[in-house]
Image 1 (cartoon, each protein chain N blue to C red):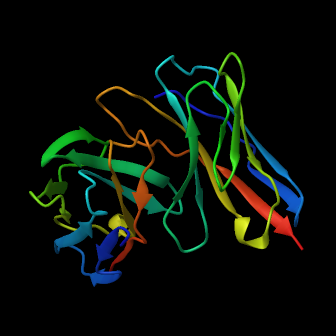
Image 2 (cartoon, rainbow over the protein chains, first blue to last red):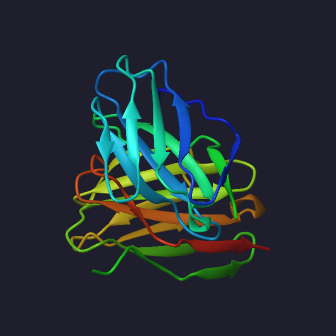
Length: 111
Length: 113
């Protein structure tokens, strides 16, 4: 499986935008870029995904580099409830699909 | 609509016993995946079922097995429990084998003593 690299931790102030980076230099042309987050004592939660173009949904935006070797998850206004571990994952479109979780980025939101 | 339901929420078993965990996916979802989460190893993929067939399997011993029923509900079984099997077991369901995202349950916390 193609691997991703994320910073171990990041801090943000409440109500400010947060940009969470992810490097995936070995991504293949058919890999989707998925983001999940996990709040304490809960299962992971789907945030957003994309293939080549930037994507927006009610939770976040995903900016994908033109060469697809990196991406950035953007939370437009961080709240205390956004404090979680954020995982950037490459999901193959082939038959053997699985989410391969790395260690993720622990996001701390300061009031 | 109802989310992914896992039962039981908590379980304590003795080493050597076996255990069965249950997962009810979101209505209409035919793909169910299982993951193990431990503090040391993080989240690790166990297996995926789609339309009652195992489509993918992670790197776990044969003591870990699963199945999926015609209504898409899934069970996983762990036989001959070891202390190291203590973990949070998470189930995730998807409409399209994950392409549009997976929805996770809250998990079953298994403690082996």
